[in-house]
Image (cartoon, rainbow, N blue to C red; front, side, top):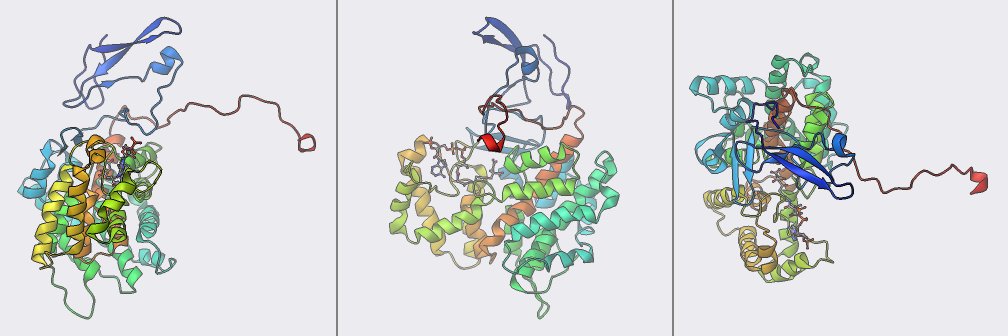
Length: 442
Ligand code: SDX
């Protein structure tokens, strides 16, 4: 059996698997497609046509929804790569603008390409002045994620000139606009919540410096960006930039597969990220640490997390894919120590509590046997709190960083000639056909 080359030209193969339907004795062959690394996939696109059956995989634990060349994760080994570069090396040696270029274009930029990209992003950081009126419709105590969902989606009302998803130039302009404007909108959401005036972006600052400036500068005095915090911010953005086909990225791909404009698709991704099982976990980790309160209470909460009848879970622990340490968590922990040392708060009680919680959990057979390790969210909240971000802004920061991953994956899907409208099927277990009974007879 030979296969057509896939959209992105991944190696075709003559390998296949055979499914036997023991109710009929029929055998069905399905192609086994190799990637460049990692698990092969069984191409079941013809399964319903051949067998009349659907596959069944709620939560998509064993389902490859697409082909991609952007990010690779090996959950067993705790490996994360973007376009072949290990996250540890990117976090240590690169910067967020380079990683954005890499995710969008597939290669690291040379000096001229990097300068041109940074200049393009910098010159798109301002938002239409009318956009500021959206904020007045919210109460001051609105969760900033609610504002992000609304205002990022509303960008589609301002950029009619770049909504043609089939135009390559417009797709790139939209990608640049989203990467550039989401931090501006995020900072505006924070300023609105604290009743301070919006701070315009500045073209003489780096991406991370600009974000900190828009967040924490006030008109009454000059704001000096702390280089340690700017470096930590840049690294946090790198660590959250993309992560294969996670829930919010899959949401963006599904929304985009209908032809919905990219601003609306990214807004859908922000909504999906908000959940505590996903991007909302960093905010939930801080709430959990506050709830635990002190080292002597840790064991009580670890027991609660192990109790199948107790819905409490250790937030920042466990992962659908990583059954080993999340490599981002290790880098984040290292950054945590660096930032707290630089800020002179090395004795931060929350960090001590988190480290003791991590130690006790990783010695407990329940977590070891279920391969529950700290994930990217476990330490990020402690750094962000130390940097004076309110916990309500933690998931917003995740969205700021993940926008480049979302738009890169969206662009890859739009440019894939084999991409189709996403439309899963189901196992129906509801009532079979029955005649309608008028209310007078019920
Ligand atoms: C992110 O997908 C991504 O890539 C996401 C992300 C990204 O960058 O996009 O990496 C970002 O979302 C990180 C994850 C952040 N979420 C949390 O920290 C929330 C706490 N974690 C859990 O809710 C949970 O671990 C999930 C949701 C992350 C993963 O859960 P799964 O894969 O659906 O696994 P499961 O719920 O079936 O758990 C398997 C077992 C269960 O016990 P049993 O039913 O087998 O007895 O492990 C237990 C669970 O009860 N378990 C936990 C636990 N996580 C799983 N028990 C206690 N504490 C936990 N945190």
